[in-house]
Length: 93
Image 1 (cartoon, rainbow, N blue to C red):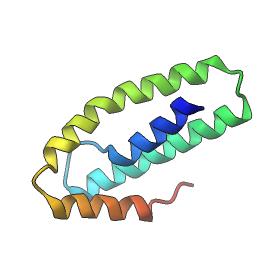
Image 2: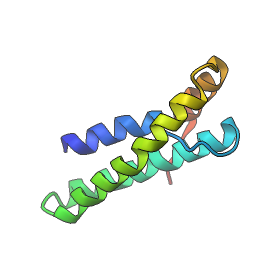
Image 3: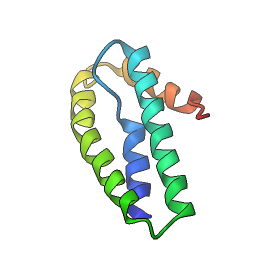
Image 4: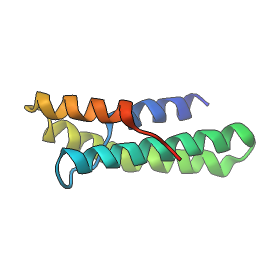
């Protein structure tokens, strides 16, 4: 569960590099929802080792995105603020 928690925390910071802030915010929300869905699956079936592999793949895939986002918004405090607001407004179905 610790890995799932770490992944969820990291997903808050992550987004894709394509498009503007709106596209990045949408991607961030999608990633958060995917992480939430995976955590819910893991809570329902804690012995399913396939979920651990899926979580590790998500983490690996998103590590490069984190680096790209950091670079993209390093000098853009308004962009960082917009992304933070998007995290607060994110609603998962």
